[in-house]
Length: 320
Image (cartoon, rainbow, N blue to C red; front, side):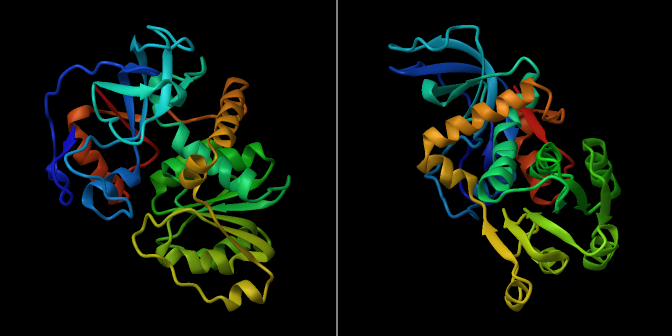
């Protein structure tokens, strides 16, 4: 799937290309599933801070089977099950990947789960176990709790011993959060987020995870206790929130920026250690990635559009 021009998603079209050949230190992966993320649609529309030269193949997350190896590659072999963050190029039948970017797919995960795992769970774990510390018994409010990052944040918070309030825009999304284990839910399109969260938690939450932004950020901040922590992850609703900073000052709250991608590029060794930590938790049954919905590869534009419109519950992968 090739993005011919930045702009409308119908610029993302099918194109036949030559079979890739791995160079030194590279492998070719036959893609069994490619994860689709909100940022993929933003990039194709030209609405992201990074604007790649066109034409390009979108998508940054794959799982599949190694089909060819280049010179000097010894860590993996043909037939191995692998997953990787590719940057770009994931929405394809075959992808060339540097061997250093590969991880083995845990036995506990199928290809579709693996293709949707790294970005969501690394973001959630980086937020709650690196940028801040969550103590057992604390209340964590997760906005956008029915999406990929939201469900991962619910899972991670529970693993850390927290109690979780899941907030989302529909009953379907809240049901997904309940299946993940959320203790309480708020449908913030029809309920008053601040007052309902305070009621459910007997006064407020200790931590907010906010990948949504827009009009939900301020009431979530106001639902945070004194000395609470507010994690800014993204702006899936569109607008970047403007919040009254007196609400931070008067209650000794802390606002924390969470940019896992930038950190991972700047500290690859730290990121590698974190991924290994997450894989071990999956293998031991401590984390529980959802089974994504599968769609055909040639529906990439449609899936990205649904993510941008926030009509997707959970994760979606493209299957060649």
